[in-house]
Amino acid sequence: MKTIKKVILFSFLIFGITSSYAKVKIPFGKKEVITIVSELPDNDMYKTAENSNEYLDLATIHEEFNVAWILPLWITQDPRLVLYNEKTETYYDVSNEEMTAILKDNNITKEDVLKVPFYNKYGGKAILLLLIILIIWSNLSKSENNVEAKEL
Image (cartoon, rainbow, N blue to C red):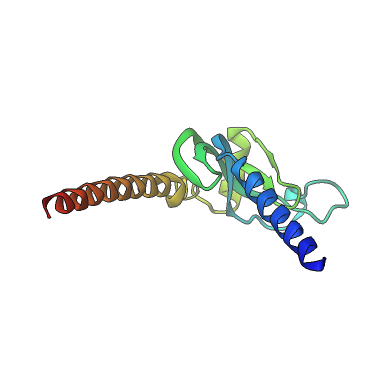
């Protein structure tokens, strides 16, 4: 009797898990990406609120078209500089004059920090190209094997 219960439970688990995985779809679409490029000094000027122990950092934000949240294919919106609170995951847009003053006060050049990371810019394209080459190569090798099998 115990073995029947184990078999029923085991089959229920196997078939229940497989059907739930079959319903998973690969997400794709636009995604905002924030990257901290410089930590600003922890002083009152960069505090998030009074009597708070949270400080803002300098970050870039850009929008990209993404597949499965990890494969960026192209940049849909150029990067811009923002102030970012990592703990609350909140960013603050500031005017160009204020950002220029912040950069000058901290001896940061805009060109050095206003960049998209290499993987976000080229990584997704490289992986997609490799996948396409692998698919084509596997299809060609299958067709060559079929031709060799017919000749024998």
